Length: 145
Length: 112
Image (cartoon, rainbow over all chains, first blue to last red; front, side, top):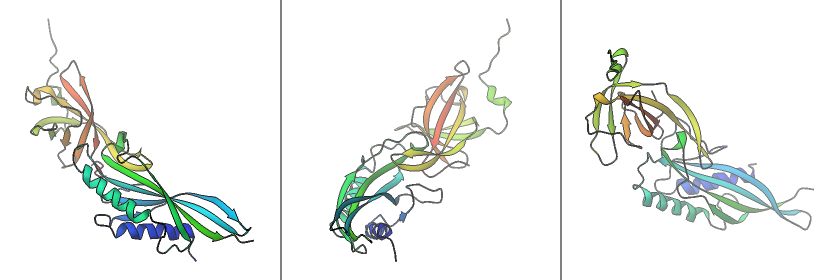
């Protein structure tokens, strides 16, 4: 039996991978770019897991936060690829910000928080364009007593 | 009075290299006798993501570049191996006979 958290991450990955220009999409413990990665890459990683509501002693709503990180080469070319990134970001938002999620049957709603479209990057991160969003899925489950 | 000319100090180094530098919206120029300093490959945070890159330093002697050339921040450096870097800082040093260009490797390139 798979955990709900991982079911949600898998479903998110599958939806994102189906988008054009988003097939390099992976699940990782943390949003970390590896030297073996090719760019652009979209990293799906887990955030917090919280109890949102309880009812009738054995029904509980959990919130599962999923972080979606888009990492691509920027190389300090500040005028190019702006529209392209927004297209991809909006496409990802639209396929994920939906009440139901195939493969995660207990999910019934979600909330969306977006990070800056182009994160501030310094130091050794300064040649990357990084964008992200956090989607918190609500899952109704049975509390085992 | 004896004076010391340090404008050609690159001559005391072996393993100098030829690099290309291109300022934004300018033509690339080829520079000889560039001395590469040590490099460090490491990680840094961008937003909540951890990515990697190499910090490096190139010593460029002014008498090896056209008189009209001045390197600018964010200029692109291509080294002898074809790796690319972007200039982070420019220090006018050694009594203004050379520039120290500190740079970061382009995305997912690292260093040699």
